[in-house]
Amino acid sequence: MADKSSKEVPENAYEAAIQYQDRVLEHGRTGKIVIRDEDRPWENTRQGRIRYFLNAAMYSDTALQEWRVFSQEIRTQSGKHRHQGGVSIYILEGKGYTVADAAGEARRRGTPAFQHQPGWAEPLDGLCLYSVG
Image (cartoon, rainbow, N blue to C red; front, side, top):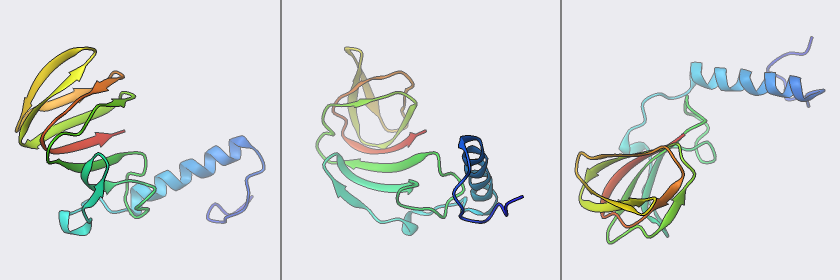
């Protein structure tokens, strides 16, 4: 039986799935759980200013590797973009609106804007906490 911590290539898809699950469980046991603002830098992107808290492509030290969680500061508007579903949005400050399936809805501080179904999201001003899982 192979050592589970080894980096050897799995012999088949089943073994690859088992190795992957072992890595996920190990991250859950040993990874960071609390991520503070000062632990993560702001980045300027074409969708606004973003600070990632959880993002496996950027941070491999967190317990959750399957989620992307970030704060986004939108100074004017975020622009029209599409979500594939499974998105939770919570407005930390500011105001604006979102459009999903051609129906507009006003958003302001303290407003949860959950979008579990695929749809278009249109301009929103302010600071948002996004969880994409």
